[in-house]
Amino acid sequence: MSRRKRIAVVLFQLGGPDSQEAVEPFLYNLFCDPDIINFPGAFLARKALARLISRTRSKTVRQHYAQIGGGSPIRRLTERQGAALQTALSQYLPARTIVAMRYWHPDTDEALDALESEPYDELVLLPLYPHFSLATTGSSLKEWDRLFALRRPAGSSSNRKLAVPEREGEEVPVHVIEHFFDHPDYVAAIVERINGVLGQLPKSEKVHLVFSAHGLPLSLVAKGDPYPQHVQTTVQLVRQLGSWRNPYTLCFQSRVGPQKWLRPSLLETVDHLASSGARSLLVIPISFLTEHIETLHEINIEAREHAHAAGIKSFHVMPALDDSPLLIRALADLVFRAIGLRSGVATFAS
Image (tube, rainbow, N blue to C red; front, side, top):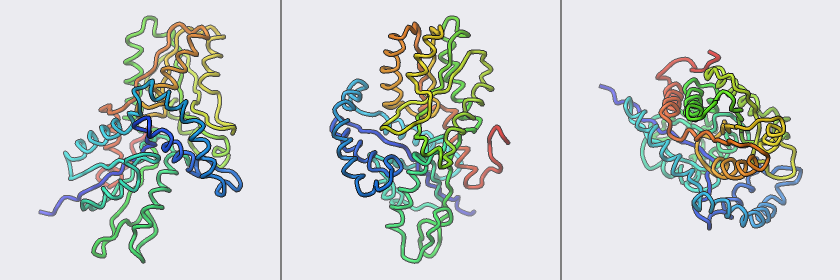
């Protein structure tokens, strides 16, 4: 009997400071990323600018993290997702999951160390960003390629999708999952969460659904970044599956710096809805898979206070998917299809 192939899955996420002391170095790592801070000549000033921004913003950001428990829960929640995915995959073949955070620990270098600690036959790179963007999935994969290249034996293939790393003359297949914004189980997981909130509210048909996605600089959109279209498609599919008649709005949050970003912003949307007579809102963090600072503080504290001041009487937030069984089923399906154990692509479009 032939041995079942062993797979390793690397789960990429943004990361977040796990303590008050980690806030400033986390911000420095974030703003050192050329996919975050980029302008003509930026490579000359990026580190100095990142140091200045991180020092300037760290006091306020530390206060925000203090209000949600002192640090980000994103590592714990991502590792929980990884454990659930590993369990789902291991029912069918030997599998292990490894977490690679872009701006904090365990970082990409640590993930590569973990990957090299045990043998595997195929590798799947799975960024936990449903909607592709150069600033998220693109940045994580570029960092992976950069660090992996430093470890790759001389003369080995330079194509990430064809081979990494070489062992005994054999190249290991690598599969990259760049997005899953239209996967049926991912969409169903969001609908399940929304229904869980609406089912507890009186006159739920009058609640305005506010889909809030992480923002993106318009400069990246001008380069052809597909993120806005991916988000819009997810919202459309969620509404179709949910079959609600509630009014809805798509907006964006988490703007940083003086650049022009996608609009309308979350707070602009709250103001507009309040002035238009809306009194009950359900904010749906459409692009976030886990709870973190953007959901727990920016939405659940800042936007809530802003909404109440503007006249909104009832403000609700959809819980993040975290380790939702439907989400884990979606991720497992993506992995199986990537390694060829299932055919086709499971999307609503197909």
